[in-house]
Image (cartoon, rainbow, N blue to C red; front, side, top):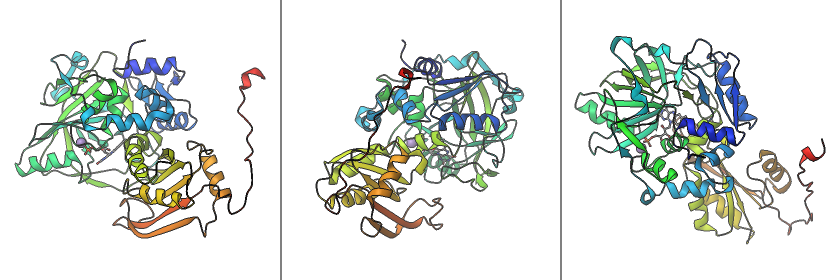
Length: 447
Ligand SMILES: Cc1cc2nc3c(=O)[nH]c(=O)nc-3n(C[C@H](O)[C@H](O)[C@H](O)COP(=O)(O)O)c2cc1C
Ligand SMILES: [Mn+2]
């Protein structure tokens, strides 16, 4: 077994562990591919490889990190150690720098100039109300024009013309900082989009980090990621990417792009965004295109769950050593945190909930449960809410608090009400004894 070092070796791992769905029948890039990929993730079947997207010459892969089991496989650890491993690799001292070289697998095929046509790439139209084809699973590779350090991020990109993409970037992002510096000099910001990657790089790119996120990917794999300079841009691009799109954001240019399925589960609005002019498209022989279904589990997993669970652990452990587990479930869009604990004092769950709010501004609902609750099972969480919570006594509200400005329950400034819920068993109030448990059975022994 070779270690995972690129998308192809990860696909081998997925096959070995029975977590790859291969689809050979022709599938439309217009909605059908996203519908199938979302269903595969929702049903916990793993990732999916579409061998024959209609009208495309390359296969499309989706759902690399769409479930907790896939996050564990990507990180090479057990499911219950995912947040611990993430905590370690996100520590700046653990970072391993990328390794520069001249060679890159994607330098095998290079298209420049008039021959560039983004319509040749199998870029899906995902959601029913999306404004068009969007690159959602590409990682933006940039460089700080002041310090020279590298940076990874996700930026949705809508195909506007054959050599032009809309480039979405929120104002507080590192790429926006770099772009603002270049705009003040009236110069373009060079960028590369790496598509088809080792999931260690996908996970790293979703993190907010004081440094080059490639160091996180290095820490995950225990060795530096090989990188190589672009053919038309001076940025260090992962050498084993399947496809690389190079180009630049010209200063003072904006175009409308959108809407696109957003992380909160609604379609957003049009945004006035910078544009990305393509200067080269490079690819490995027989490349695999990669996508992330927007507004579905992988999007939340990479952006809101994996980078934040370690922070949540740090903050709740600060008030209690009795915390035994936690999860920011993808179905909660990053707004919900579940904390599991061995209750010592009857008031402790509420203190733990208070601490959880401070871990990330987006968190608006905290549910504290006992050790017998499976924090990965929404039905078990709902059981605890239904059978262990007296809404008058076991909840508290924090009105007028700050949340995410796109939280659908918040006003345009992100002001909303947070709620803490102690869903632990209170035997002192009324004792119910044992909870019913039919142990799981291996049905292959019976059927
Ligand atoms: C699938 C996915 C799509 C995203 N799309 C965008 C986007 O279009 N615009 C944006 O500003 N941030 C987007 N984000 C969030 C950030 O790009 C990302 O989390 C990253 O950490 C930001 O990088 P930075 O910390 O170096 O600024 C997306 C995140 C994910 C996981
Ligand atoms: Mn960054």
